[in-house]
View 1 (cartoon, rainbow, N blue to C red):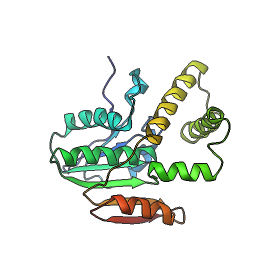
View 2: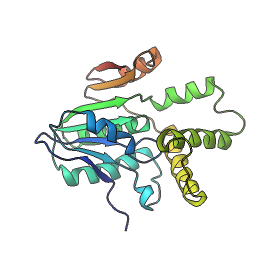
View 3: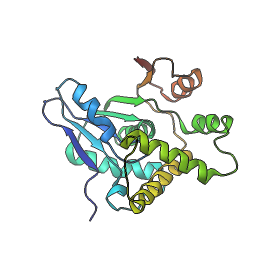
Length: 219
């Protein structure tokens, strides 16, 4: 039986937990340094992809979000909820916030870290030539770059495990590309490295966040 997607990154504190949603690779190790840096006022959980524990990848991004939401509510049944996510994780956090809001719950924080709306991401990839003749080869290149970024240069991963991780990566990319986000009733905070945010990115999220968009630059 696949285990829970919840990974406790830091315990302690009495405030409601912060839930950090996995990026495209499916793991949540990327949030450990962030968890160490934040004020110890609340526990911090990662929500990793159940596919890492052998579950079949969900067919759509809303299905992925619903699975993670069920695990989240096992820890915190009622709001207010604090959600964050990097890259794909930000888009997943956005959809989780949508589902919570539709269920009548309060989302106190929806923080997207260097995340792009899917339609804009596809436009940028097309303009960059990243969706050209051999999409599988380009996807494998993106996967390799992501693996190096997460595991570090020179990390050795058995071929069988690497292929499993690629299948998860591919399923997540396909779910992201087919996702069409609806307008969100609440406020949204976008964190970007200084100079990396684009007018298109701000305009796209701003058009979806009916409660307002706040942009925070990180050094």
